[in-house]
Length: 86
Image 1 (cartoon, rainbow, N blue to C red):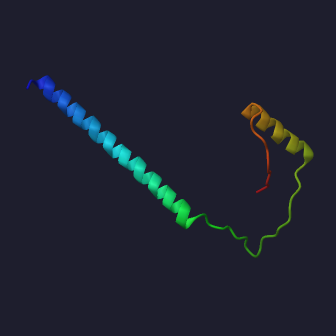
Image 2: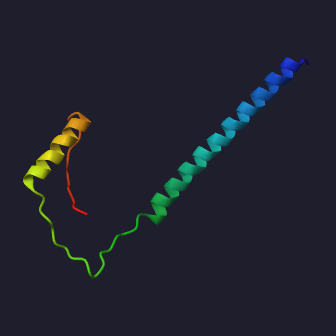
Image 3: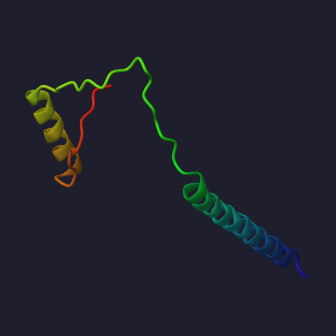
């Protein structure tokens, strides 16, 4: 076998190896994600005793500005469903 044949053989083996390893990473990652979502779930956030449940009203002009910016950035496909002050 010539040197060029050996080079192509090494190239093929390397590419197949990389493909197999990346496929395993994707498959194992998806299995871990499904397992965590199914059995562990999301943590429930609890409010501390010191915090209050007071709702802060946002100025109507500020809300209109937020809505118009979202419309402009998303080209009319986005909607503002909730605005919270942090």
